[in-house]
Length: 130
Image 1: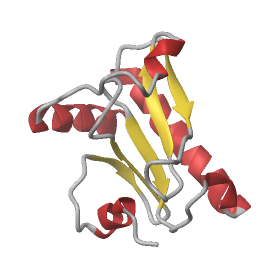
Image 2: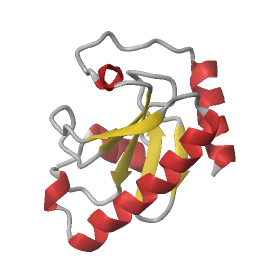
Image 3: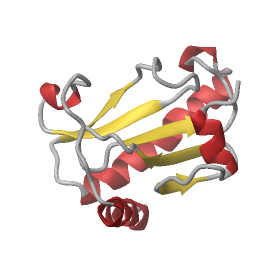
């Protein structure tokens, strides 16, 4: 099951990486709902979040918490929203989205467009806050 996320992990597809360790990766969503919207994924190829083994699931959530804390420091927002949809890519992942209200997490809204320089600046800001 090689997904686009597996290709990002392997370095075959570029991404605006924010944080990475041996087990997990966080990178900006290229079709964001807000500045700083990112995806947190396990490097282990598992399709559905609740199919992850307990250790990987718990590790993913703790990794996401660290990233969300850094995001909140540098992205103006009321809080960091968390959602798991998992229909668009067959690889377990969590969306972390800076929000000011519940409608900010509406995936039917048009996605924002940023330049490569804007994506890089946002990724750098979050990375520096870690």
